[in-house]
Image 1 (spheres, rainbow, N blue to C red):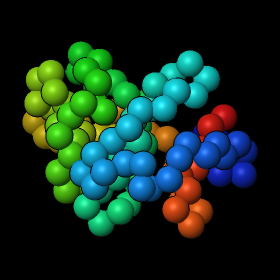
Image 2 (tube, rainbow, N blue to C red; image 1 turned 180 degrees about the horizontal axis):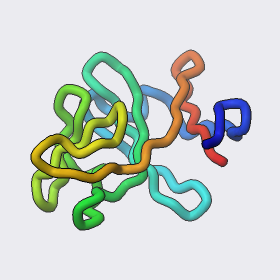
Image 3 (cartoon, one colour; image 1 turned 90 degrees about the vertical axis):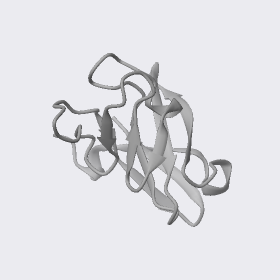
Image 4 (cartoon, rainbow, N blue to C red; image 1 turned 45 degrees about the horizontal axis):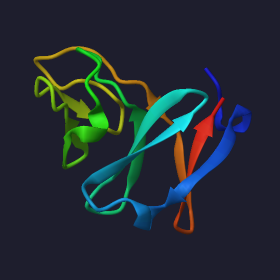
Amino acid sequence: MKTSIDLAWKSVGTIDDIPRLGSRTVTTAGDDIAVFRLADDRIFAVYDRCPHKAGKLSQGIVHGDSVTCPLHNWVIGLTDGKAKSPDEGCARTVPVRVDGRIIMLGVS
């Protein structure tokens, strides 16, 4: 597992580019990553595919610290990428840091 020291940090915009309880998609190394802004301005990022049927999580509904997949209503926790019970699976998370209002993603 890579540590934050091993990662290259890539600027992908500002907090203000994403509405509260919304998302935007960025592409890094050919992968689509969904970047989410919660109601309290916390930022999370996951690869933009549900572990169930690869639905676009960026098109889902954000609530609390989770997103509901638009295809089959799986709820994915944004803090850890895990599907909420009774579903099982995990969306791959991406390290995020915020520098001022600039969103940085940790990419390998």
